[in-house]
Length: 135
Image (cartoon, rainbow, N blue to C red; front, top):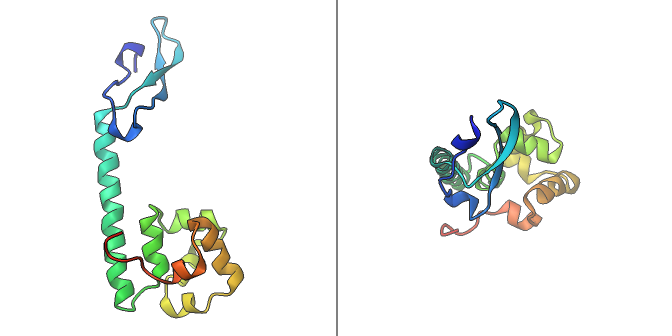
């Protein structure tokens, strides 16, 4: 992108901040430029957030039906997936998947549960339950 083509669409997700991008100057060399956002980026971000909200709603239903542990709801409510949660906790992906099973999650040792507490910045009691529907 050329320096004069750097988007300045005043993105609502930037909340008045600016983002540094690389662009080519008049000499064809790369330099940095500040952008106030790009409308297309806002659209995609809104879609991603709505998708995670949908995942969280569906996970809430599975937890209420006893098909999944509250960990699945909290994972999606915090905009994470299994890979991201595994990276945040130091568990392998297969371990996180296993912890999504209610019977396994119920019997997690305090040390393992603490890793989730730190990743979500929640207490063990908060992790074991779902927040009220309006949150």
